[in-house]
Image 1 (tube, rainbow, N blue to C red):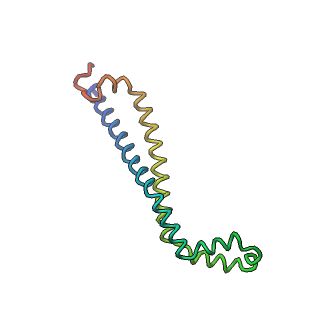
Image 2: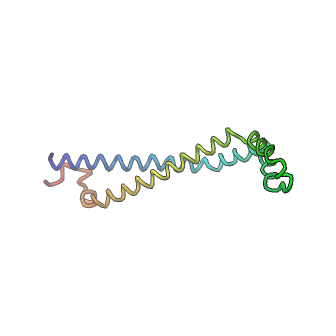
Image 3: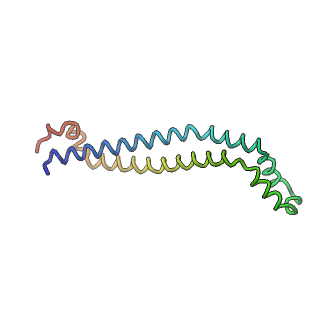
Length: 133
């Protein structure tokens, strides 16, 4: 292959890596922005369902907890805000997935730019026709 074709391929790869970094960055920022409302949604659901009351009995119940732990456990499970919990867990998982991938993409981008620093700074990626063979 000619030098110009190889330079063009490298340029396309660089654009793809930068695009992936941008997309994962948008996901990280978006999910980070929705974490607080999702937590508030979960806390309100727990408060309205009585989950917080049963949870407080679990921690401060004392002797009565030892006698009726089966009933308390069943009450906790029944009063748990399932939809709110599922939404919150989904947002946390998307955030963690995006954060993991953006860290990987940024690491790859940094290594790629370090490896191809000469071509990037001489504008061989921007204008492959001006590159001398």
